[in-house]
Image (cartoon, rainbow, N blue to C red; front, side):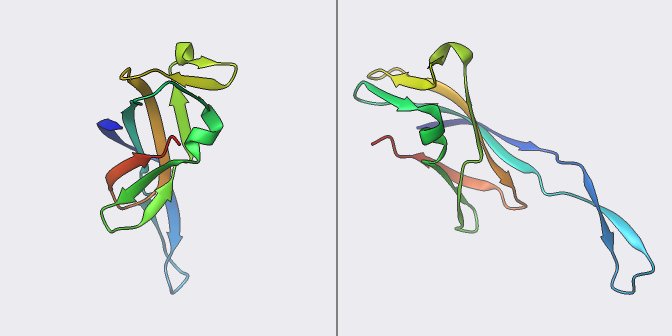
Length: 112
């Protein structure tokens, strides 16, 4: 798998109450951590798109591992919910891992 580009998607703001309860402040939410990736296999495989989402993990720069929460493929690559991987032909995908203040260090996918 190759990471093509990281995307930090802004998720708006939240109101935070101060300890004294008299003042509130507005702070940005942590960004949604996403990336454009390409997945390549050495063998022909068919995988269910939902199954793949559960098998893509990111390691954040602090060492924590998180599982993908969203996974999108090009419309032409999905047939009846399945993605077909052909030998040495990359399949493009957009994957997100939820909101986090910590950036992604690496992404891995287990196809087997």
